[in-house]
Image 1 (cartoon, rainbow, N blue to C red):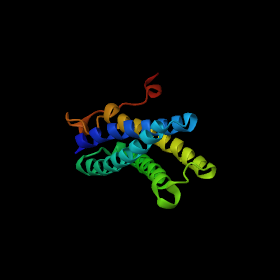
Image 2 (cartoon, rainbow, N blue to C red):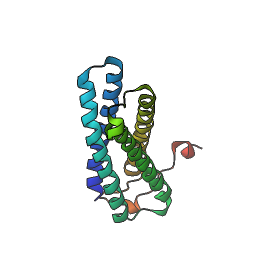
Image 3 (cartoon, one colour):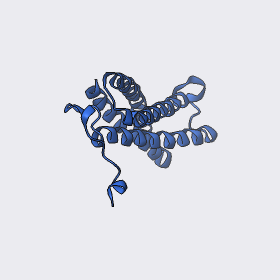
Image 4 (cartoon, one colour):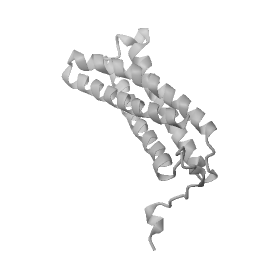
Length: 159
C-alpha cells in the first residue's frame, strides 16, 4: 500500500499546485483558459488529495513504524488532512450553487485566494514531511525500513 500512496501524492501535488497557479494567473490576466484550467485541476487535485489521504491511512496501518517516528507521522497526517480540508473549502466556494457564480466577487474572492495560499503552504509542508519520512528515515522502503538507523539532524552531528 505505501507504493500506491507514493504514486497518488505526486499527482496530488502537481494538480493542486498548478490549479492554484492557474487561479492566480486568471486573477491577473482574466484569460478564460486559466479559469477553465484551474477549475478542472482543482476538482482532479481534490479527488487525488482524497485518494492520498485514504492511501496514506492504509499505508500507515500496513507499516510497522518505529516509535521514534510516530510523532512525525502524526504531523504528516494532520498536515495532509488540513490540505484536503483547504482544497475542499475551495471546491465548495467554487462549485456550491449559491456561491459558484459569485466566487469572483470581492469578499468571496479574497477568502478564496487566502484559502488557496494556506492550502498551497500545507500541500508543500505535507510533501516535505512525507519525503522526510521516506528519504531520511526509510519509512515504507522495501529494504526493511523498520531497522533503518535514525539520522540525527546535521547540527546534532557536529562536535
